[in-house]
Image (cartoon, rainbow over all chains, first blue to last red; front, side):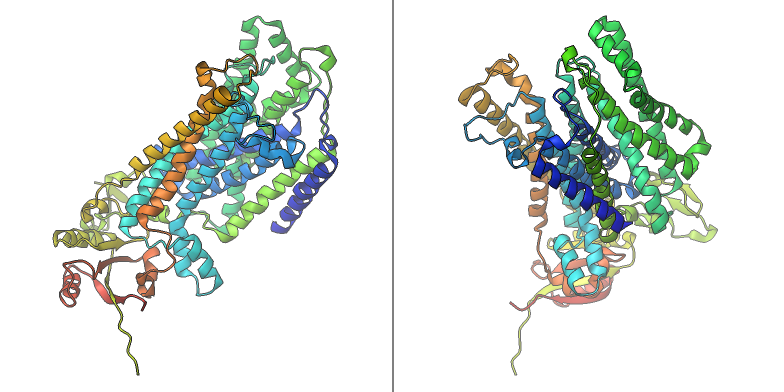
Length: 444
Length: 185
């Protein structure tokens, strides 16, 4: 699994990019009018994938959803790797990649500064902030667990390396006290951040005066879609990881069912957004807006629209049934469908709009070149490779937080259970909502 | 033959459960110790209070870090777009009323600076990173990040005494009490 994904990553990302850099952006299938094709589609796709990780780690933390504990680490890792994949596309889309430093807020040789009023520059700030803060959140969350590995490793290189990354963590309560505050702060910072990132991505489209893009529904629609697609990706990689590593007691069916419910909820929001977009186009009375949507549904890209609708809106509806939320094969199939559907959503938004802009002279049918496809496949390989490395070398379940959810972790556990003659285990009220394990408990 | 004199770091004692650690922490606090810490592999609910710790000051640091980010972004955007090199793009104004267009970047830099302040502020408050620590010399202390619960009372505490502290730790329920020495300088 690791070797094929590494090979795909090397061939796709390494090979695809070398050809692109040595030859020019012309190797992609983009034309004079369709400047944004697979590259920007893939960028939005990967950035969207990342959002579920932050949602799980930050928003579910703030809302005290204890079930997030066993999946947050892997989901955060997924965020980081997805953003790594996303970053490749806009950086190389600029054409002369050695000029990518033009994106940074420093004046160029002619002392001209970036346009701070442009959504594209907002995007640079949003995505780089998102990556940095997610990395800090992920790393800080891992420090106590790295210390656990350090203390269990035999002396040698392994112990030294984990020791360096564990920063000398000792687990003293004076450290935990600040640490918990830092974790809470990062969760509180990441929550608005994650909502802002995909909103800013949607501004790239919404602030332009192009029929099909110029709508106010875009920010919430993009954020809901990102969470939707991200959860599908979490399930796509966690279900196999759970089976291979035997994590059935950590990632229980309750976790999977909860994620399926979130997919149902966000999928329905996305479906609502698709329909509302059509309604607004009709209600606006603007003929260009109406034509843009008519072209999307019935034009030469009808197949993409159909794929988007059936994968994103119809397929998650099976999760209304508990039987489907409990069947891993159904969940896996729906997750794969959503992954595909969300890619097509971005393709529909970007390509069908650009292929039919204001002037008939601009009209063009866009097809991706093999090199665009290879690069995209390469990023999938890269994503899997990074994720497999993560599973191999880093704690894929948050050890410290899982310990915290055990009943014995409570400082009053012994007091409540001083006389366990009748065999019952008493649980403090704040832990009562945790999933039942084997022992029967009574809430006090 | 030469003898090396080692400095004493303090006493380390193990406790059997989170509950035992919590109760012992209350007793150590009431006995008036100040240079000591409880070690566990996960944060124990309410232990801050049992140890008499104040709320972390990190949020105040992060607030100022975040504000620095907002101001930096505003100055960066305003100076470059309005003062040094006003470029009219898409007929948008180049004066103070351009402000709304700067909001996204002001927001992002607020978060970015807050994130960095959280990271470096936390490391500063925890006095980390440091690669070694006298406690790491203890074999049993390896379990502090696994399933052990420990209290270490430091020798630099004014209440510390060579014999009294050891007895005190035994009295409050500590076991495997160990004298920890610092590495010779």
